[in-house]
Length: 454
Image (tube, one colour):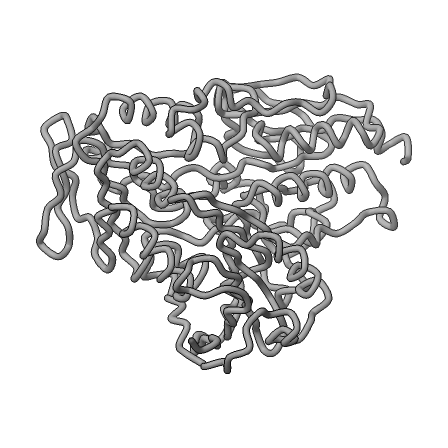
């Protein structure tokens, strides 16, 4: 590493998982200069996946989800104050409290926030929650501890489904309202969405798909909701799970390629400016990043995954203190997992980047299976339900651009394969967003499902 890159001032905006891991990696890579982390929450970095699982189940308090530091980072922490802008010429980050923080290199890791309920007056009703922060989780867990008569969950993506699962495990009545045709359909397509819907109903969830909540009702305190089909739901708790909003508004005047879909960067995490020219002193990592991936047609991909935040932060930090020939790309295959209704769902690749799927192991009927996805004759993803041991095998096939469908020896089925429609919806019809978003062109949506008979 050159002395110039070893010293200087690095500012990391975003003090959550990606920001913390980037700071640790910078020190591991030999950076000896000034390091400042800016975060809008007053809390030190904490882990978000437990919030919709252990915290809502009452097994772990929200205050016990802090992320362990892998090493001392010797940094100045500015917590509880949001970034308000960037001067790319003067190399300054403006904070909401009026302070200015100078930098030589900047890492943007501001992540996402929960998409709010569109009516502020209704959102302010006592009993209406979102779930993104530890404070959100603490407040919702306290309300669940009180034993509400019914919980209304608006949106059936992964967060909404995990909230519904926690409610049922607590034996709390729950209604889930989803604008799309089934839970998880935006992330996994219609095949596994049908399995997810059966999980909900088998565990006593009042699942209502193809409808929307048109209004939340109450006089200071939530009493229920009206739906687009004319029906009503009585509930004293509602959780708005309408997906995430990327935190880019503070970059509106920065001259960077930042917008609602994220901050666009190259495979080395260097941000583009608004004219499509790559910068060399501004980097991006985590949920807010939008980057090209060669395994998925160089589409710009935005990921809301724990593993991606860590991997991308480490690549960004390495590249911030490395010269051109020694920089490396962020090419990790997306992975994620979810635990709900007693089932473990794990994914590798990008399921929505597909035109066919094959049920390669197990069956839809027993809800213990592996579904393999392909696009134009190449394997692009695999999702397991209670059969995660197969995913390392399929990840290797994805990374090596193996042909789709997989070789017969990889599957434990011998019956003929029957093509069926896969029913991948247009994202515009969903009330929840996918955790992997292809933000360039979408593949042909005239999709088919290839399934073993029987």
